[in-house]
Length: 192
Ligand SMILES: Cc1cc2nc3c(=O)[nH]c(=O)nc-3n(C[C@H](O)[C@H](O)[C@H](O)COP(=O)(O)O)c2cc1C
Image 1 (cartoon, rainbow, N blue to C red):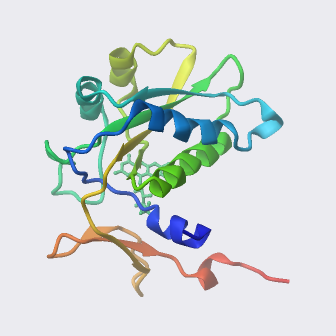
Image 2: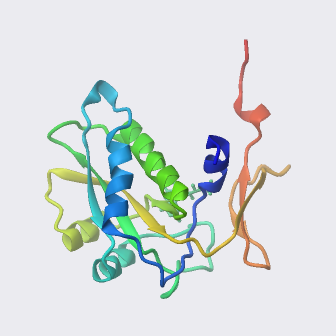
């Protein structure tokens, strides 16, 4: 797969094959790539909690928020929920600001998941207090982002943002998930 193909295939998937499993070792391989990625001042303040365990997954899921634009959809039903989670934490004893490292690490993990035939969704809408309790996360670590992973069981297509400028994703009558993307002309402000 070319990098372009990998990026195109790395969509946000929110419905999964609930029967599929992910090996704990696979999660470790994904995080290993994030660990080897760029980090501001090379401080490497990100830490991770991994779950490929159905019982733990079932305790994590209720504290994740799904597809805010799909107002009538409460999130993946039982049987189509993620097979694994990577919870990305910021170690406040190493740094107070994590956003740039976080983006690099999160996308690296998602790309690596795609390469392995997996897919998932970055979840920023998280009940952090509840999740901290469920996973017993010490106060020292900020809960930054949850990556939900599994074997995707939905079709996602990209399309140009229309004339109204609406960037909200939606599902059509065939249950296909559409994601509007701004054009290259819109996002490149200058070229010299
Ligand atoms: C930082 C970040 C936080 C996100 N949080 C959520 C979330 O809480 N729930 C959700 O369903 N999707 C979440 N997403 C997924 C976005 O909605 C998704 O990236 C966007 O709709 C574009 O779709 P695409 O990833 O397929 O390009 C998040 C994405 C990012 C980058």
